Image 1 (spheres, rainbow, N blue to C red):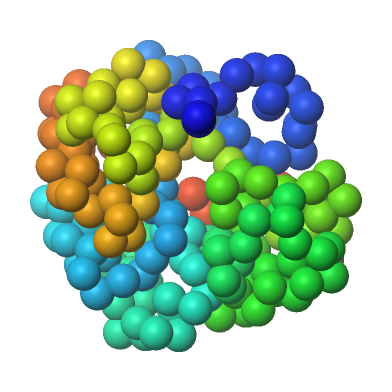
Image 2 (tube, rainbow, N blue to C red; image 1 turned 180 degrees about the vertical axis):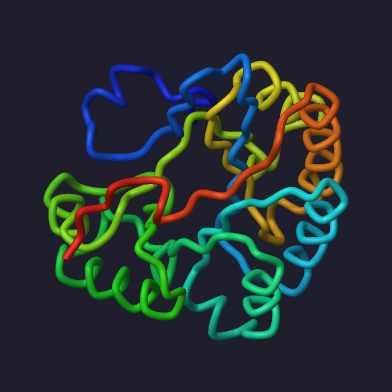
Length: 216
């Protein structure tokens, strides 16, 4: 089970995490923040880059460190295209089931490879003790809307509806540039880009300048 729209009580429980990007006037500034987890991979990430380019869209890629090592050319393409980079641990570890020291070491390894202070915990699973330590050096980026593209039982129509029924200006939306998600992603992503483009939205990336990080 997973939640499409992050409830307010969860946001309130972790006030130091970033759940969306505050927009001063949502009527005048229509902005969506698309994010992609788990890449880069040769089989999927280039497709995502091509789709984003068609709409002059910028996005944020939360990269698994191991995939950066395995696909360095694709990683360089992300940077060259002007997208933002965040880290997603080196081995896609669940914080709930990982020793704190091992988890932090894994996070740091991926952050160094990605050269980013933005971090998204895999599965969104992180212990408060881990978060406290990580927030000394990194900004934890969560999400407002989960597309569900990773769900093997989801339909294209349901995935599309998950996004357009819940995402509005300032929303951080999660997709995955992974082999597991590709069958759905390759159909839904163009639909989402076209929908919000027609509605007058721009697609922006999350950067370290988006926040006052106050990091050492």
